[in-house]
Length: 366
Image (cartoon, rainbow, N blue to C red; front, side):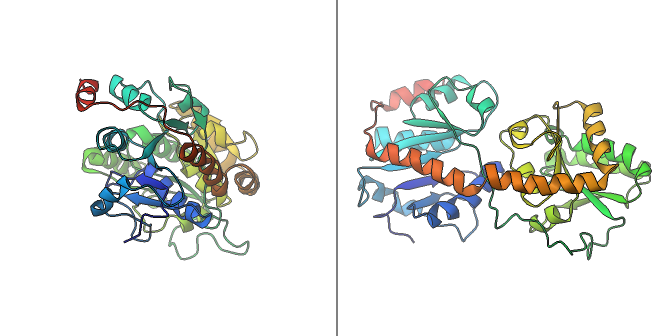
């Protein structure tokens, strides 16, 4: 159990299942700690190595930290915002509320109310920021360059995988319509027969809700006679080596919040073809690190993939440039430093939000 005296930031995580937010928290908090920030997370669904506070320590938030007048409660979901409002406004704990928004849609009345109660708001990209009706700061996610890195030059990328071919193309993430997994599979069924040196892999959770969707893809692959060259890996314990094995990564999402996988792929030295969902278009340098196509546009997605698998040398060069681009623009340290500046402002400036009563919270949810 961590003492709270030197803790100035609480990053709640109120979801058990793995998500993009989970990935962000898992990568970011150790970097923030490395830079000297006193930060703990609270909640389920996170690895044991992350520094956490216990629910039994919540009462300790009534006491101010040793070197500040209050703490920052950094929420990333509605339930985390609501919990922060209750702690600050009803229980009168000395907290400043910060919300990071990745959503690219118009917010519900309830969410808008919660956002209006925040002391500061961060958007993960310009498009997400365009849906906010309050002042905000854009801070793009970064990637851990020590964790996600290219394989050594002499490495045989497919060694030990048991997969056929010479080059690997992949699509990672939850297997569902929203993620465009079907678009990737369709492109592979149509392209791989003309490119015998390439094999495709798909990794990610298949929930019961989307099992029928995944079964349909498996049947399509079998009907095309490509079951040996389009493989479902399921959820793998460590995705990093698979990024290193790829020559091309495809992110065909129809809808996305931010989306870290293209950054992870480029950091690993892999070229990327992505839709313009989420912040993908802000990550990729068109024609240099890969290509961006309109979300849901199958023909343009297929065309962009075809150009790179037809020229593996070009794909590998794009992967090298992708690594350089991520180092220059998307290092995790940069995200941690910019968030640190927001935290510092909140820790030194008094809250401008008036306290509210329980009845107001009830009315906001109706």
